[in-house]
Image (cartoon, rainbow, N blue to C red; front, side, top):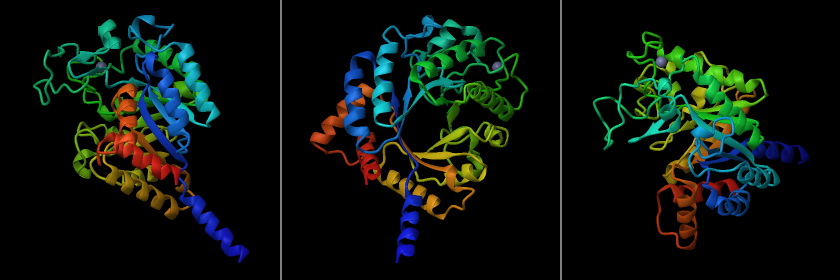
Length: 352
Ligand SMILES: [Zn+2]
């Protein structure tokens, strides 16, 4: 009997998700109090143990104050979030988008505005009324990974944000990079796009490794869109996917899929990467993704088992507007779908 009990408790342990994660934009300074409450009263009781905060330009960088938003988090604000996460055993992971996402819709962000020489496609002007699709193929601007001065600037930001967050992990984004190895770039033109992408991932990974920090990235550029049938955003149609065989195996992959419970976590695990599956706004898909991840874990051989790292719920609105909608929903749950309903579903599963 004792033997049977041991076996069943091992099986149950194997079903546990190592990472129960949540990813959202860092709050603006005036919502830090609310956000600390949200961490303490909503995320921690649901056993969330990893919180990725997209900081980008919402921090008063002392290394490059010119790049910060006019209203941005202070180090004191950040330290308060660091403490509440430490008290609740939550691994707090800062994100600044590197390489891609240097603009959004009609707005270019400060890196390429203040350092226009870093822009991979300076000839593409930001449109007044952004539309997709457009003649320029503009989704988001990228910086040029081969510009000789870009890393001095971005690594100063990375070091500073990791320091103030006391971070063991750093998320570099790197999703949806449509502009890479552009024909018009005097440095990148003619280069293999997979090599360019992998080169940038490895450069960031190596920089973080100097201080024993782990790099996390979104997985979409590493999936072949044409062969897999996955969409233009969640997979690559610009020949970056072969980078999967060129990047260091200790890069952590956040594998986001929002329309279907794609099982590409297995692909990343088989390639040697730690991976978490990331839902967003469809509760029924999130439930399948959680179920799949638990299945991968319970069926994995000992070599693959540590690579299946769990689930990270992703939110793409600001923290303030999300919290407003979240508390409204808790009081009066009307919507059956959407990012709030999905978050409530995922947190409920985490807490079980
Ligand atoms: Zn370039």
